[in-house]
Length: 251
Image 1 (tube, rainbow, N blue to C red):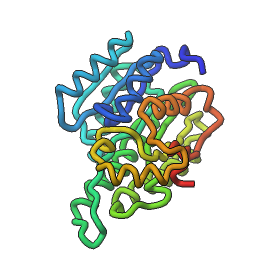
Image 2: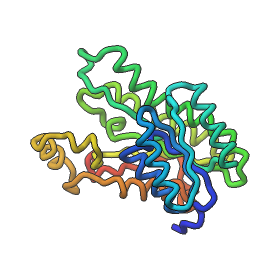
Image 3: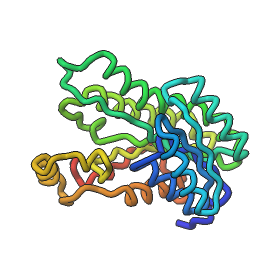
Image 4: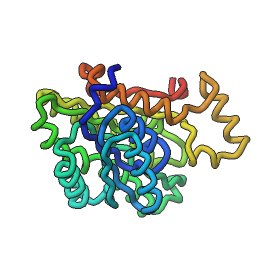
Protein backbone atom coordinates (compact mmCIF):
# COMPACT_ATOMS: atom_id res chain seq x y z
CA UNK A 1 0.00 0.00 0.00
CA UNK A 2 1.52 3.28 -1.18
CA UNK A 3 1.31 5.94 1.54
CA UNK A 4 1.54 8.70 -1.08
CA UNK A 5 -2.12 8.06 -1.86
CA UNK A 6 -3.04 9.63 1.51
CA UNK A 7 -1.02 12.83 1.00
CA UNK A 8 -3.19 15.93 0.75
CA UNK A 9 -6.35 13.97 1.52
CA UNK A 10 -8.66 14.81 4.43
CA UNK A 11 -10.14 12.46 7.01
CA UNK A 12 -12.71 12.76 9.78
CA UNK A 13 -12.32 10.36 12.69
CA UNK A 14 -15.02 10.69 15.33
CA UNK A 15 -14.09 10.08 18.94
CA UNK A 16 -10.34 10.20 18.35
CA UNK A 17 -9.03 11.52 21.66
CA UNK A 18 -7.98 8.07 22.87
CA UNK A 19 -7.84 4.37 22.12
CA UNK A 20 -8.71 3.04 18.69
CA UNK A 21 -9.87 6.37 17.27
CA UNK A 22 -6.67 8.10 18.29
CA UNK A 23 -4.55 5.32 16.81
CA UNK A 24 -6.40 5.55 13.48
CA UNK A 25 -6.15 9.35 13.41
CA UNK A 26 -2.41 9.27 14.06
CA UNK A 27 -1.80 6.53 11.50
CA UNK A 28 -3.67 8.53 8.86
CA UNK A 29 -1.59 11.59 9.75
CA UNK A 30 1.60 9.53 9.57
CA UNK A 31 0.63 8.50 6.05
CA UNK A 32 0.08 12.14 5.02
CA UNK A 33 -3.63 12.79 5.50
CA UNK A 34 -5.01 15.89 7.17
CA UNK A 35 -7.23 14.83 10.06
CA UNK A 36 -10.29 16.31 11.74
CA UNK A 37 -11.78 14.88 14.90
CA UNK A 38 -14.29 15.81 17.56
CA UNK A 39 -14.21 15.52 21.31
CA UNK A 40 -16.93 15.33 23.96
CA UNK A 41 -15.22 16.20 27.23
CA UNK A 42 -11.50 16.92 27.59
CA UNK A 43 -10.20 20.00 25.78
CA UNK A 44 -6.66 19.32 27.04
CA UNK A 45 -6.66 15.76 25.69
CA UNK A 46 -8.04 16.95 22.35
CA UNK A 47 -5.35 19.61 22.01
CA UNK A 48 -2.68 17.03 22.84
CA UNK A 49 -3.90 14.73 20.07
CA UNK A 50 -4.09 17.70 17.69
CA UNK A 51 -0.43 18.43 18.38
CA UNK A 52 0.51 14.78 17.83
CA UNK A 53 -1.27 14.83 14.46
CA UNK A 54 0.43 18.07 13.41
CA UNK A 55 3.81 16.63 14.41
CA UNK A 56 3.53 14.46 11.28
CA UNK A 57 3.57 17.59 9.12
CA UNK A 58 -0.14 17.59 8.31
CA UNK A 59 -3.04 19.81 9.32
CA UNK A 60 -5.48 19.03 12.11
CA UNK A 61 -8.92 20.35 12.96
CA UNK A 62 -10.60 19.68 16.28
CA UNK A 63 -13.82 20.91 17.81
CA UNK A 64 -16.31 19.78 20.44
CA UNK A 65 -19.26 18.02 18.83
CA UNK A 66 -22.02 15.76 20.12
CA UNK A 67 -22.26 13.14 17.38
CA UNK A 68 -25.84 12.32 18.37
CA UNK A 69 -26.90 15.88 17.45
CA UNK A 70 -27.76 15.96 13.76
CA UNK A 71 -27.43 19.73 13.34
CA UNK A 72 -24.12 19.87 15.21
CA UNK A 73 -22.73 16.95 13.20
CA UNK A 74 -23.65 18.62 9.92
CA UNK A 75 -22.07 21.89 11.04
CA UNK A 76 -18.88 20.08 12.06
CA UNK A 77 -18.60 18.44 8.63
CA UNK A 78 -19.18 21.79 6.91
CA UNK A 79 -16.35 23.36 8.91
CA UNK A 80 -14.02 20.50 8.00
CA UNK A 81 -14.86 20.92 4.30
CA UNK A 82 -14.19 24.66 4.58
CA UNK A 83 -10.92 24.02 6.43
CA UNK A 84 -9.47 21.29 4.21
CA UNK A 85 -11.32 21.86 0.94
CA UNK A 86 -12.22 18.18 0.70
CA UNK A 87 -13.41 15.21 2.72
CA UNK A 88 -12.07 11.91 1.46
CA UNK A 89 -12.37 9.58 4.45
CA UNK A 90 -14.80 9.15 7.31
CA UNK A 91 -14.20 6.82 10.25
CA UNK A 92 -17.27 6.50 12.49
CA UNK A 93 -15.52 5.49 15.68
CA UNK A 94 -17.28 7.42 18.45
CA UNK A 95 -18.99 5.07 20.85
CA UNK A 96 -19.99 4.50 24.46
CA UNK A 97 -21.15 1.62 26.65
CA UNK A 98 -23.78 1.53 29.36
CA UNK A 99 -23.80 -2.18 30.15
CA UNK A 100 -26.61 -3.72 32.15
CA UNK A 101 -28.92 -6.72 32.02
CA UNK A 102 -31.99 -5.78 30.01
CA UNK A 103 -34.32 -6.25 33.01
CA UNK A 104 -32.26 -3.66 34.91
CA UNK A 105 -31.40 -1.38 32.03
CA UNK A 106 -32.80 2.11 32.23
CA UNK A 107 -34.33 3.84 29.25
CA UNK A 108 -31.65 6.52 29.35
CA UNK A 109 -28.94 3.83 29.19
CA UNK A 110 -30.53 2.43 26.04
CA UNK A 111 -31.06 5.85 24.45
CA UNK A 112 -27.57 7.14 25.19
CA UNK A 113 -25.85 4.17 23.52
CA UNK A 114 -28.15 4.04 20.49
CA UNK A 115 -27.94 7.82 19.99
CA UNK A 116 -24.16 7.99 20.22
CA UNK A 117 -23.13 4.79 18.48
CA UNK A 118 -25.78 4.37 15.79
CA UNK A 119 -27.39 7.75 15.26
CA UNK A 120 -23.94 9.36 15.47
CA UNK A 121 -22.70 7.18 12.61
CA UNK A 122 -25.85 7.99 10.61
CA UNK A 123 -25.43 11.72 11.25
CA UNK A 124 -21.84 11.88 10.04
CA UNK A 125 -22.38 9.52 7.12
CA UNK A 126 -25.31 11.59 5.86
CA UNK A 127 -23.31 14.81 6.25
CA UNK A 128 -20.19 13.68 4.35
CA UNK A 129 -21.93 12.14 1.35
CA UNK A 130 -22.47 15.33 -0.65
CA UNK A 131 -18.84 16.50 -0.27
CA UNK A 132 -17.60 13.02 -1.19
CA UNK A 133 -19.88 12.89 -4.24
CA UNK A 134 -18.16 16.01 -5.53
CA UNK A 135 -14.76 14.33 -5.36
CA UNK A 136 -13.42 12.94 -8.61
CA UNK A 137 -12.54 9.67 -6.86
CA UNK A 138 -15.43 9.58 -4.42
CA UNK A 139 -14.46 8.62 -0.88
CA UNK A 140 -14.31 5.89 1.74
CA UNK A 141 -16.40 5.40 4.88
CA UNK A 142 -15.41 2.98 7.62
CA UNK A 143 -17.68 2.13 10.55
CA UNK A 144 -16.04 0.82 13.72
CA UNK A 145 -18.47 -1.75 15.01
CA UNK A 146 -18.01 -4.83 17.18
CA UNK A 147 -18.45 -8.58 17.29
CA UNK A 148 -21.03 -7.71 19.94
CA UNK A 149 -23.18 -6.66 17.00
CA UNK A 150 -22.53 -9.99 15.27
CA UNK A 151 -23.05 -12.49 18.08
CA UNK A 152 -24.63 -10.42 20.89
CA UNK A 153 -23.13 -10.09 24.35
CA UNK A 154 -24.57 -10.66 27.81
CA UNK A 155 -25.55 -7.38 29.45
CA UNK A 156 -25.09 -5.41 26.23
CA UNK A 157 -28.52 -5.35 24.58
CA UNK A 158 -28.09 -1.63 23.90
CA UNK A 159 -24.48 -1.86 22.68
CA UNK A 160 -25.09 -5.02 20.63
CA UNK A 161 -28.15 -3.45 19.01
CA UNK A 162 -26.24 -0.27 18.17
CA UNK A 163 -23.34 -2.20 16.65
CA UNK A 164 -25.63 -4.54 14.71
CA UNK A 165 -27.40 -1.42 13.45
CA UNK A 166 -24.08 -0.06 12.21
CA UNK A 167 -23.59 -3.23 10.19
CA UNK A 168 -26.99 -2.78 8.55
CA UNK A 169 -26.20 0.89 7.96
CA UNK A 170 -22.90 -0.08 6.33
CA UNK A 171 -24.53 -2.44 3.84
CA UNK A 172 -27.36 -0.06 2.94
CA UNK A 173 -25.07 2.92 2.43
CA UNK A 174 -22.67 0.81 0.36
CA UNK A 175 -25.48 -0.03 -2.06
CA UNK A 176 -26.78 3.53 -2.22
CA UNK A 177 -23.51 5.30 -3.01
CA UNK A 178 -21.43 2.74 -4.92
CA UNK A 179 -22.31 4.40 -8.24
CA UNK A 180 -20.71 7.61 -6.91
CA UNK A 181 -17.37 5.86 -6.23
CA UNK A 182 -17.93 5.86 -2.46
CA UNK A 183 -17.20 2.70 -0.50
CA UNK A 184 -18.61 1.87 2.92
CA UNK A 185 -17.26 -0.96 5.07
CA UNK A 186 -17.13 -1.94 8.73
CA UNK A 187 -14.65 -3.41 11.17
CA UNK A 188 -16.34 -5.68 13.73
CA UNK A 189 -13.69 -5.59 16.42
CA UNK A 190 -13.00 -8.18 19.06
CA UNK A 191 -11.27 -7.29 22.33
CA UNK A 192 -8.54 -4.72 21.84
CA UNK A 193 -5.98 -3.50 24.37
CA UNK A 194 -7.43 -0.14 25.37
CA UNK A 195 -8.08 1.71 28.63
CA UNK A 196 -11.39 -0.13 28.87
CA UNK A 197 -9.74 -3.53 28.47
CA UNK A 198 -7.13 -2.68 31.09
CA UNK A 199 -9.92 -2.41 33.67
CA UNK A 200 -10.75 -6.13 33.35
CA UNK A 201 -9.81 -8.19 36.40
CA UNK A 202 -7.34 -11.04 35.92
CA UNK A 203 -9.96 -13.78 36.20
CA UNK A 204 -12.19 -12.26 33.53
CA UNK A 205 -9.21 -11.55 31.26
CA UNK A 206 -8.10 -15.18 31.45
CA UNK A 207 -11.63 -16.33 30.67
CA UNK A 208 -11.77 -14.10 27.60
CA UNK A 209 -8.32 -15.13 26.40
CA UNK A 210 -9.35 -18.79 26.59
CA UNK A 211 -12.12 -18.01 24.10
CA UNK A 212 -9.82 -16.34 21.55
CA UNK A 213 -8.13 -18.87 19.22
CA UNK A 214 -5.09 -16.61 18.76
CA UNK A 215 -4.76 -16.41 22.54
CA UNK A 216 -4.35 -12.64 22.90
CA UNK A 217 -6.11 -9.33 22.66
CA UNK A 218 -5.55 -7.17 19.62
CA UNK A 219 -3.67 -3.89 19.80
CA UNK A 220 -4.65 -0.48 18.49
CA UNK A 221 -1.78 -0.27 15.99
CA UNK A 222 -3.04 -3.42 14.27
CA UNK A 223 -6.52 -1.94 13.99
CA UNK A 224 -5.13 1.35 12.68
CA UNK A 225 -3.24 -0.48 9.93
CA UNK A 226 -6.33 -2.44 8.91
CA UNK A 227 -8.41 0.75 8.93
CA UNK A 228 -5.95 2.53 6.66
CA UNK A 229 -5.98 -0.39 4.24
CA UNK A 230 -9.78 -0.33 4.10
CA UNK A 231 -9.70 3.40 3.34
CA UNK A 232 -6.95 3.09 0.75
CA UNK A 233 -6.98 2.72 -3.03
CA UNK A 234 -5.96 -0.90 -2.50
CA UNK A 235 -9.45 -1.60 -1.13
CA UNK A 236 -11.48 0.31 -3.72
CA UNK A 237 -13.14 -2.90 -4.93
CA UNK A 238 -14.34 -3.76 -1.42
CA UNK A 239 -17.64 -2.33 -0.22
CA UNK A 240 -20.50 -3.38 2.04
CA UNK A 241 -18.20 -5.79 3.88
CA UNK A 242 -17.75 -6.49 7.58
CA UNK A 243 -14.17 -7.41 8.44
CA UNK A 244 -13.68 -9.09 11.84
CA UNK A 245 -10.31 -8.34 13.47
CA UNK A 246 -11.09 -10.43 16.57
CA UNK A 247 -8.42 -13.12 16.83
CA UNK A 248 -11.05 -15.68 15.91
CA UNK A 249 -13.33 -14.94 18.88
CA UNK A 250 -16.52 -14.93 16.81
CA UNK A 251 -15.75 -18.01 14.71
